Length: 137
Image (cartoon, rainbow, N blue to C red):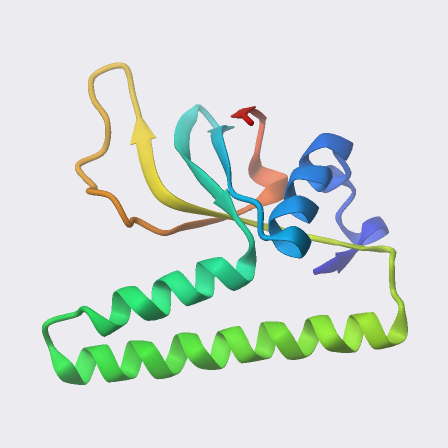
């Protein structure tokens, strides 16, 4: 999260509303993003869902050592996120806005073909890199 004046390119009211719906209400929304000429489509999810999904995916990794390491690292990141959110709420800093966007089942779309990724691909990107978006409710 960042203060609005630090990241003014993310103050799109529609995008912020969608991010609030996913983060605060757990809503998932189909979305297509245009980012510097690249098109990424997937399901918009909140950070908590993103971290939980990564942790579950890590548990399915065949290499048990890698699975344990990924599980631990992403659990730590999720807990840091939760702690940060709790601190924000305690301080009642309503002037904070999201700086990252999270997608599940993400695919890159080009004129030639979609990405080779199968479902359950997790994607995270900077909101200030988005040139445009469309969504389906």
